[in-house]
Amino acid sequence: MRALGLISGGWDGEIAAAMVRAAGWEVLGLHLDHGFVRDDRAAEARRPRGFPVEVRGVAREFLAEVVRRPRHGYGSAMNPCIDCRIFMLRRAAALAEERGVGLVFTGEVLGQTRMSQRRESLLRIEAESGLSGRLLRPLSARFLEPTRAEAGGAIDRERLGAIHGRGRREQARLSAGLGLPPPRARGGPCCLLADRAFAARLRDLLAHSPEDGPPPPALALLRRGRHFRLSHRAKAVVARDEEECRLLRERHADLPSCQAEDGRGPVVLLEGDPDETAVRSAAALALRFGAHRGDAAAPVRIVGLGPGEGRIVAAPASAARLEPI
Ligand code: SF4
Image 1 (spheres, rainbow, N blue to C red):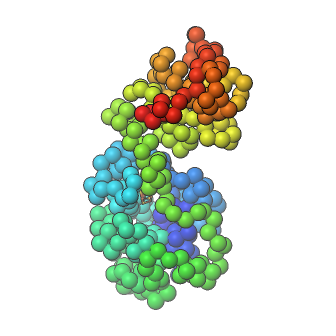
Image 2 (image 1 turned 45 degrees about the vertical axis):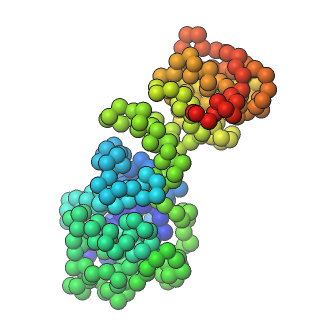
Image 3 (image 1 turned 30 degrees about the horizontal axis):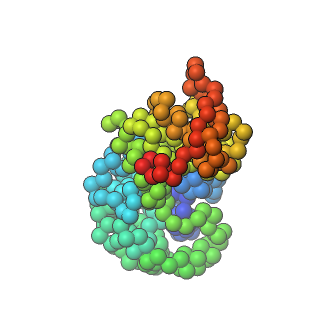
């Protein structure tokens, strides 16, 4: 009577876990950090709850095996949801085997997303993850084939859910019945790969990275700022507000940066291997996105580029300059 649940930090997974626990099962959670999980979901998955959640990092394998070459294609952006579910559940199956756990469950809901939660997709994911007969989706269980646990009477199928589609009313009812608090994380896709703007940045980074993938800090940087491709080897990342200025400075202190000398503008990070032209372009962006837009040339402070660093005078980047980069 032990079950292993995939915990992504979303509401459906929480409800699924509560349903399995309410049926008398001991639950162990597994959160796989594939490197693109939304910040709020990652925090939610890691918070303490009434059962243990094991967190494992799988970013490198996920990028190489799933994101770059999905066998079942992408969703609306760069989200390989079917391959992602198979990848996650294969790892869940391995952990279940290791711990002698016979049942694996997820918060998937039949028909909730067009790609990975259609009936054929759910069946394919179950088969390809090696969990046939052992994968329970408690929220939609009564619309799906019974698992061995249901068939054998170890879990009462009549007390499982019959939810279909995108509505949240039934989840709210179940959640209240189980005494759960309202959802903490926002709704929507569970990771950044489903965000078109993020996907465009990732495609650009992969196109300008070696075959074995970009370094982890370059991937982490995709979450913040406005990104400008200055050359094959260099990129500028412009902070969008004060909080981002602080985060870029703190979390990427090893990267060169520039900022208007009078402080009236954003921090701009230089990533890769910037040459003199790239540094000048970054300085022009620092002025463009600060209080100098359209003004005459102004001094920009450069930090972290070694000998010769310090200060250059640049003109703010024009709208025409922004378009190609
Ligand atoms: S949105 Fe992201 S984490 Fe969620 S199933 Fe799709 S690829 Fe996986």
